Length: 125
Ligand SMILES: [Zn+2]
Image 1 (cartoon, rainbow, N blue to C red):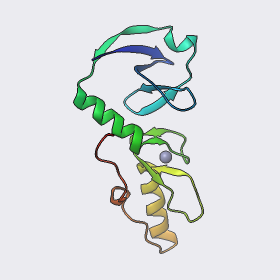
Image 2 (cartoon, helix red, strand yellow):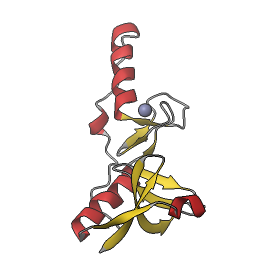
Image 3 (spheres, helix red, strand yellow):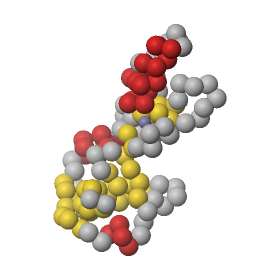
């Protein structure tokens, strides 16, 4: 299927033609991101891209497993709940690995491998 490709803030964004519950557009940038549905979104049409079903499933999984990291504020293909008790934030692998190293060095506490999270989704709905 063909999807429109837009240039937004100097980044290429694929309009997946889906919105979340808040009406934000799913705009794939190589990472699962959301964009405000307004005129500026549709201003700079660059062209079209063809996505296969396989690619769409992969992207769908990134929207399920990934999102915004509460620590660095960046979008990531995978985020998991923070390792800190009582913290409801999500953490990307970069922040996770940094925290893991810090904790191993100064707190003598073990934080598991980022990828060992048992709840990663492997199949799209
Ligand atoms: Zn992060």
